[in-house]
Image (cartoon, rainbow, N blue to C red; front, side):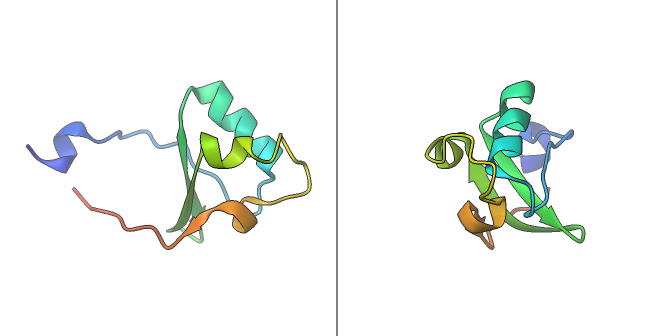
Length: 76
């Protein structure tokens, strides 16, 4: 089985400067659990719904402050 055969092709992502509150809305609206963080066309981090729920829809904290940095990725 290849990665390409199981991966999602339409990816919802966010900028590292997006607020936790806006990211939670994006996650809720799209019924997803993980949000890749993209900066200048490059994957720089990832957050999960669990990571964000800790901040209770905080408007002042950015994803840059809470994301897991430099995630490993695989290309299909």
